[in-house]
Image (tube, rainbow, N blue to C red; front, side, top):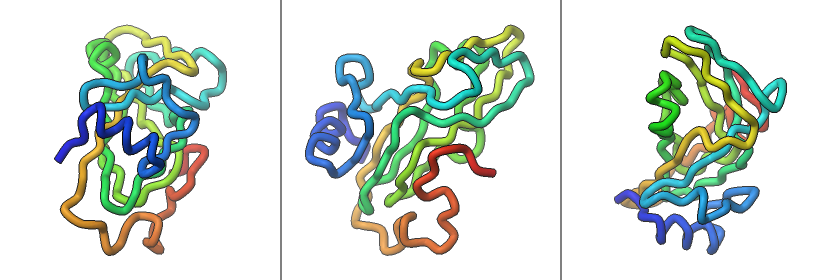
Length: 152
């Protein structure tokens, strides 16, 4: 079951899903997604030329409980310019904690200007049928746990 806007907000306000800093609900909350903003880049403004690929993070630190998973989506306004947000692995396992790493790729014909703090992606949340036995934070292979910067 995909969480609705009211269920996302309740889960965040009750601390089941942790988003830091707390979202501006009027701007960030969609009917079934929560927008996340572009975090660390080399400068406050970055031009992604056609064919360019970079790793970046969101400003938000996201902590997902053991019975919910997250799915990252691009925003259509940027997708129509050719921006891919997460090209290979949009699923965030139950139990994930950290800043979301974005795999930004410009497949369009024109440069795309990205600014720190800009809403670049959205996350939806799905309720699992039961808590995961091996949530991400309990895996020995969880090399992206609590990440603050992109890791290869």
